[in-house]
Structure formats: structure tokens, C-alpha cells
Amino acid sequence: MGEKEEKKKKKQKQKSQQHSKTTLDPPFKLSSDVKGLRFGGQFVVKSFIVRQASTLELLRLLALPLSSDHHNNLNHPFLSTTAFLPTNFTILSHHAWHTLTLGLGTRKSKVLLFVFESENMKFVVDRSWPPEIPLGEVNKKLIKGLTRCEMARFKFRKGCITFYIYAVRRASSSGFSCAEDLKKILHSVVELKDFLDHTAMLALPKQRNIGYSPPVVKSHK
Image 1: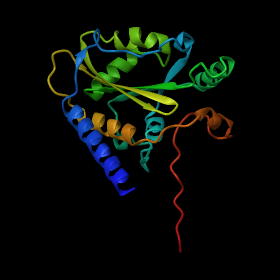
Image 2: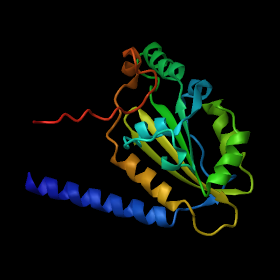
Image 3: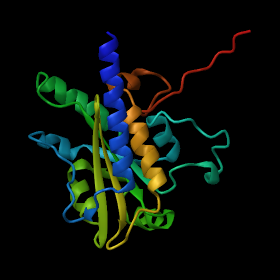
Image 4: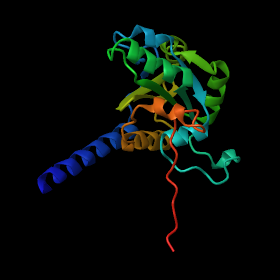
């Protein structure tokens, strides 16, 4: 048992070191060359919609603490990051597709995170991006559409959610000025436990979006 735990800790340490090294020197490629979303044979998934999410939704998804002053943007982390989450209808569509195909259709949702080299770059790009977009158009309109830009792509499978994370900078730039945001996001995603069937969340009266609710801390007197 002790040997198993030792191997597990060693593996986690190696993974953490690998991600730290990758974050410091991510493999940037031109947006025309970087890999996009992958669908395999699940072509129907291309019609499913993702929507732009708020910073608070992103924090909940990454299981990160919320600022007590959530109305003040200065206290929000990840101001350089744009996130796309599946809509409620997409979550239900995944579930229905999985049922209709007798378990052969995927019910895994895709989450997209774009970490830009600056808040200004994010602001400019956000103005040209739609608030909602079918997954099948993401590669062409969002990824390949960022001409004169370079990207570094990261992909993580966490149970029923696959995370696609793209660091974005202008072509021919050196380094990545928002590396700290990228590092925090990668670390948070790596630390996340696998998401189970999140369609169950829609049955809860006050849970209308996928997300994370931090546990209530009870004081012991």
C-alpha cells in the first residue's frame, strides 16, 4: 500500500513539474496551424451550442474561491480570459443523444478557455466574437479566425467535460505576458476531480448552469 502511494505522489509531482515547464514556455503555433476541437465520428455534436460565460461562472467551474466584492472588476482574476460553456440545451442534447444511440453517442461536453496576452486584446476580440456559437464553427470562426495570432493548445479530459485551453498572443511575439493567468488556470484544471453526469444538475431548482458550489463551512463551537 505504501509503495502504491509513493508511486502516485511521484507521478503527481512529475505531472505538476511538466505543466509548470509547459506554462513557462508554451508551444505557440500560428492560428492556422494549431489543432482545433476534435469530434471523432460524433458529427451531430457539431450543432451543439456553447455560450460565453461570466468570470464568476468560470471561477465556479474551476472550483476557485469567489471574491467577497464580486461587483468590483478589479478583484476578479482572469480578466484576460474568455470562456465558452455548454448551454443548458446542449447539456440536455448530449444526454438525449447518448440515450437515443443506446450509449454509443457521447455525452461529454466541451469547455473552451482562451487566455489572451493582455486584457486589451481580449476586449478587442470579444467584440468580434458572438455570444453563442455551434461547436462545429469554433475551429473556423474562433481559432482559425484569429489571423496574425499564435496559439498554444492544451487539452484535458475531466469526466464528462473536456477542457480546451488556448493561450493567444500576436504573431512574432516573444514570451506571454499573462503567463500567471495561464498557469493558474492549467493548475486548477489539473487539480479538478472528474465531473460526473452534470445533466443531474438541471433537476435542481436553483442550479441552471453547470458549475461548482463551494461547500458550506460550518463553525464548530
